[in-house]
Length: 186
Image (tube, rainbow, N blue to C red; front, side, top):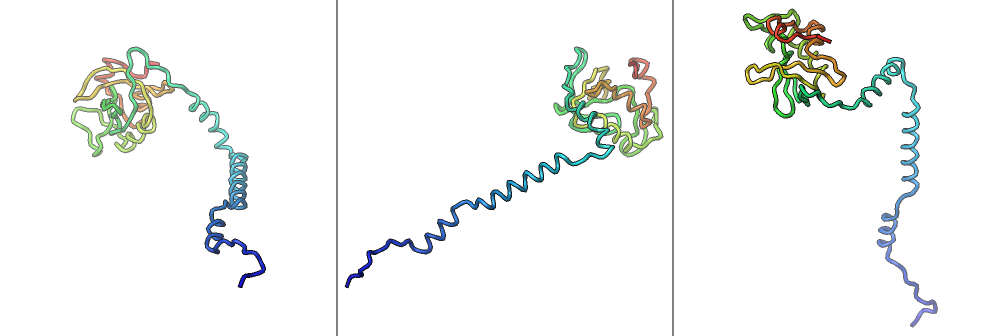
């Protein structure tokens, strides 16, 4: 016997559930987009405290500073590692010993016949890291010592690193070598 009603094609219930899962949930997407916009607006308009306000011009200057090419008598060193208070390594493998600078050895000793600063090796290493680590510095080769280039180096802002290390009190000037090529000339 036939139904008087024409047959309706009905999709099985499992297909209807699968279709619902495939449709994007627009309410959820709108909620996430709104939350992201609100977080961005809040972070962008967040008031800076006084210390950060003082740092903003310095940071802007640092970010806008373009690397000037090294003068003809200098080589560039992309600092990979600071060994101690007077030695660092460039990413190209060059080992640089700061000319006329004496720092304590990593084990806090001083070699016989070398100037011996009162400051610790750790403080000298920390100061050299502050000045040079992860930066592109320029250096003028002065000589060679134990497979290291002895050099006078400058930060991108043209601060003489050798001089800054001595003025920081963490190292001493090594007069014997300073007479050959004086530091702190600028």
